[in-house]
Picture 1 (spheres, rainbow, N blue to C red):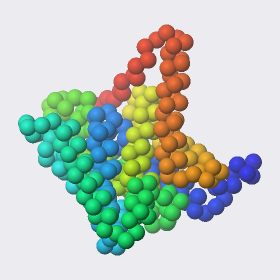
Picture 2 (cartoon, rainbow, N blue to C red):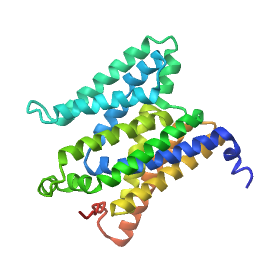
Picture 3 (cartoon, rainbow, N blue to C red):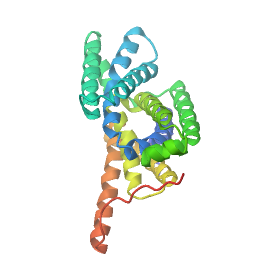
Picture 4 (spheres, rainbow, N blue to C red):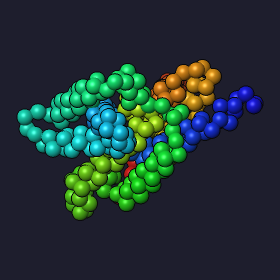
Length: 286
């Protein structure tokens, strides 16, 4: 038993565990809305679009999470400004901004003397390098996201399932959309500090997608997503310790594997019971 718990007796692994759990909480509150609203591609693009801000912050000696947040916000603002364009679809604007931001980031990083090291850290992160200030940042971001999510729960719900009804009820869907984009920006920025830009998207989407397979009501989906994200953190750190693999990547991979494991179990049960395999729709009440 002592061998199994050995990794979690080390201080930096314990900080990584706490950071991963805090990140799981933040992603659970945001990831469900991202999937329900069909904003998955935006989340993916934003995770790559953070690179320019992170790279500039690194070269200037500034706060990397702040740089990531500013870059992600610029990405979100650009998408929001182009979403009503009649010349091309929303996916086109997201794709163009995604490639443009990523290209700028690589160009900036390429001017750094420690190009390979910096780029690896930017893209894949290092959860084992989390410090106390990082934990405080995650805790603060989690508190803000939780409070805003509670205050805007009804507007978010109406915006997701019936925007016309949201206007009728005076819930201001335009404002709700902006606030949701800001929450996504904050989530991606703090996720970067734990698992890097590329893997941040996995932690945002995988636990929430898995939770939607086993729960229907939004509060239950969010709670389940948090549990799955926390489990992925524990298992990922444990596997990383004994298999000598990259901790951040292992955590993200475990989260994705949990999703496919749940999906496989659902498919097997559906085949055994001869019932449709479709994912039940989310439920919410205004």
